[in-house]
Length: 389
Image 1 (cartoon, rainbow, N blue to C red):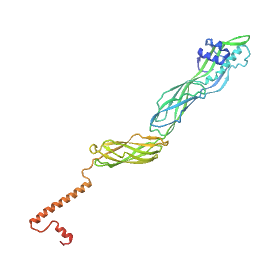
Image 2 (image 1 turned 30 degrees about the horizontal axis):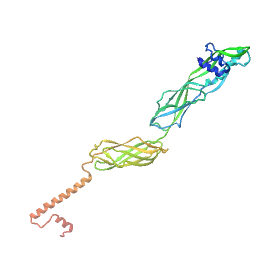
Image 3 (image 1 turned 180 degrees about the vertical axis):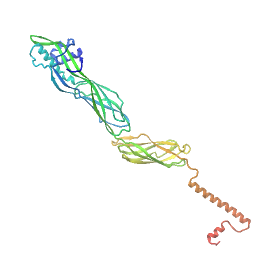
Image 4 (image 1 turned 90 degrees about the horizontal axis):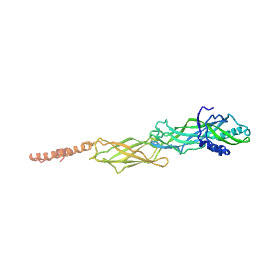
């Protein structure tokens, strides 16, 4: 009949079926023992089985760059799809044997929905998406009767920072077994061609084993703001304060509203101006922040690559306050040259003044020794005045 594994019911379960299916015979059946034999009376074959669905509890939206908990609920939408008559009993008022068969047939029909129960449900979430990794292994959901909805089953999923925003399908593989058919057999107890009870009730159960179903589970990786540094400029010197200019770009998918940069300096740098307002920064926009920075000339190491931490505070599209990870502003401070153009000009002017003073003193002494009534630069003055004294 069915090429499935045969399983048998324990006395307790059999008694329950007797109670539910044939209440008039409950007293006699409860005291019977279970006999295993050739159970060949099959009245109907029913078609159908469990039909498991899965859904994400909540809105199914998750942020990247973290491990998130995704709660899934299972539901059983199984229905009876049809039946086939095998050995149907139509005359229910015939002999005691016919009455017994009619009773067993009724029990078989009344327990039809047992084939819709998924037994031993196991659910495994898998991901074939690059950058999305499921950390939780198979989870058990027990048995699910038709119409049942499971409690949330949580799966921990790692979503990498570089996963683009969008919707992704994960796969939930559910496995279970379910009843395919049940056959009853019993001995009749009756008088005067009237069935009064049954005894020695036997039942045989056939199961479909290891049924599996792959269910798509859709999750949405929400867009976000992603800042990067594209350029750093400065005129920092160990001898005075200077300006630091940092250009940021929004490489994300969402606008950063009401954003500003906060700088965290450490020796040899210091500042009293550690914040710079950026305003709204749309995806693809570049914005430049300016800071006035001082350098401690006694502690700075020239040509060393320093990294100053910066972070951007902003509001997302829902008005939630967000803050970026630390963005490193890399700086090198070059040693000031010993002679600059300004100092060179000053040095030349000083030499000219000193040279002029020395010439004046020496020339005045020379004229005095010669008894000349003459002063240095008289000839120059005459030329300038056109020969006039």
